[in-house]
Structure formats: C-alpha cells, structure tokens
Image (cartoon, rainbow, N blue to C red):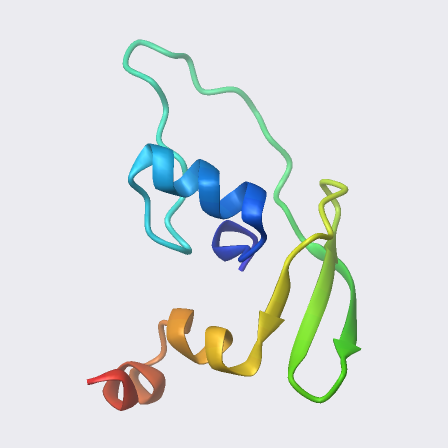
Length: 84
C-alpha cells in the first residue's frame, strides 16, 4: 500500500520512474541492495466518508486513499474482475 501512495510527491516520483501504483522501486544498475526496514502502517484515520489516511513508519503520511482508489490498486481477484 505504501508503494501505491496517491500523494503528489509519490505520484511524481512514480511517473518519472515509469512505475505503476504498488510497484516497488527498482535498484539502479550496479547498485548494492541495502537493508531497509519493512514499511508498515502505524495508524489509519478516516477522511470524511470517502477515504483513509495512513501514517507509515517511514514518517510519510501525505496520501489520502479514497475508497475508489483502493479498489483500483487492490490486487485481489474480486477487485481485478470488477475493473474489467
């Protein structure tokens, strides 16, 4: 979910890298993989009746995930079938 953050900063970064929401960033050629702690949600709050805002352990909390957006990026079979 963190890789699918819909905030402007994350959308811009994904767009420049040519990644889709939910797709992890790739290492640059020749770069050594470094240990990175898994990103986890530390809290979630409702935004009105239309969305959720997550706070992540990497200190990011800008994205507002609408119910529609969550369905669009959900990888489960049920949501994928409804998108087609």
